[in-house]
Picture 1 (spheres, rainbow, N blue to C red):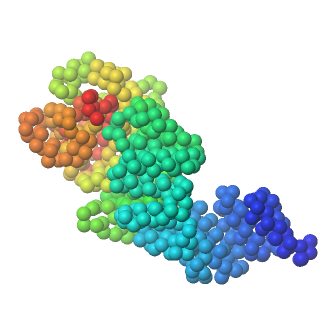
Picture 2 (cartoon, rainbow, N blue to C red):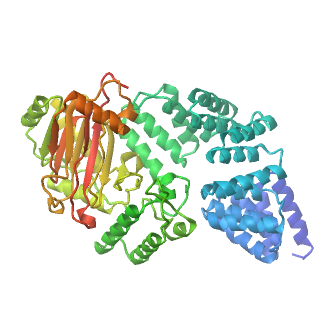
Length: 588
C-alpha cells in the first residue's frame, strides 16, 4: 500500500465513525495502523471506538501512544483520561484531564470529565469549580448543568443546586437525568412525594433508564415506616432497574430491601449478595460510598490484626506481608478526626496504599450448611416454658450451636473481610447481612431456630442479621430496642477471652417500650429510654457472657451491652451475632 493511501483510509475511517458505523471505522483504523503504526490520529480515534465498545484496556494503550507522539494535543489527553476513568484509575484520570486543560483551557469535555472524577474522589469543592467552568464553556449542554447541580446539592448548596437543575430543564425539558437530580434534591429536602413525582417523570421520558427506575424504587421504599410492606410499584421498579443494568449495586440493594419487606428474606439475601459483589469487589471503585471514605484508628488496628491472622494461618500468600505493610503505613499517616467524631477521612495517599482492599470483599471464608443441622441439642419444653414464664418474654440458652457450626461460624467471622462499619461511637465494628455478612451457615441457623422453638417464634420469620466485633473497649452498644418481634443475640468468642465471667453479656429491662415510639426513639433517644425504665419500674436482667450462649427476648425490651473486660488480641475480640424475627405487632 502506498503512503498516499493512508490519508485516504484515515478519511474513510473518520467518515464511517461519524456515520455511526463503528465496525467499519475500526477496520479502517486498523488498516491505517498496519501501514503506519505511529499515525497518532488513527491511534486516538481507534481508542475512542474501543472505549465505546467497553474495551478500555486496549484503548488505553493506543491512546498512550498517541499522547507520546503528540503531547500537545489536548483531545488525546481527554481520551486518555476517559480510558483511565473507565478502568477506575481516578487519580490518573484527573491528571490527564488537567494536562488537557493546560494544553487548551477550553478543550471540549475536559472540565466536565474532571468534575466527574473529582466528585468520585470526594473533592466536591474542586468538582463544583470544574463543572462551573464547563457550564461557561458549553452553556447550552443540559448534562453539564445537571452535573453542576448534582455536585452543588452534595455540597449542601441546595438553592444553587436547584437553580442549576432548572437551567438544565430550561435547555431541554425532556432531559431525564435532570428530572432524576431534581428528585434527588427533593429527597435531600425530605419532600418525598415531590421526589417521587420527579422520578416518575424521568421514567416516563426514558423507560430504559436504570438509574431512574432505581431512584424511584428507592424513594417509594423511603416513604415507608421500617418493615412496612412496599407498594407493588416499588418492587416493579427495583426489578426493572436490575433488568436494565445488572451491574448497578444500588438497584440490587433496593430489590433486596423490597423483597425483605415482603418477607422474602432468602431472595432478599441473594439480591444483597449481588449488590455487595459489585460494590465491594477488590480493586477500587465506588469511592463515594461512606465506608470507603472514612476510617478510624480502631478500624485500621482491627484490619492489621486480621491480616496478621490470615498470614499466620496461611489464608493469604506472598502478597500478605506487602498488604500488612501498606495498612501499617496507612495507620501511621491517619489524620486526626474532626473534634466531634472518631472517624478520619481517607486521603489520596491512604487510598493509594489500601484503596484496592479497604472495606472490600477480598477474603471470604467458606461456611457451608451443615447436613446434620446447625442448632445444638436444645430442651424445647424447658426453653419455651422459661421464655413464656418470664414476662414479657426473656430466656437464655447455652449450647445454641453444634460444635461444628460454632467453629465454622467463628472461622467465617475471623477470616472474612466483612467488618465494614466503623462509625459507632464506642469503636466497635459492624457487619450486616445486606452488606456482606451472610453465608449458607448463617442462613441455615436463621431458618432452624423457629423450627426448633416454635412456641417462641410462632409464625415470625427472619428479617435481619448482623454482628458486632469489639476490641478491648469497656463500653459496647448503648441502650436501645430493636424494631422486630423476637430478638436472638448470641456470642461466639471463647470464654477464656473474657477476663470477668460475671460481665460482658447483655443487660435487659423487662417492660415493653411504648407502642407509640418510632424507630428513632427506639434506637437513639437515651433520655426517653432512661425515663421510661425509671417510670415503669422495670426490673433489670443481667445475662453474663458465655461462648455459644443465646439470649432470646421480646424485641420491644430495652437492652444494652454489659461492660466488657476482654483480653487484648485479635482472637479475643468479643463477637456477637443478632437475628431479628417478625415485626412489632400493631406497630409501624
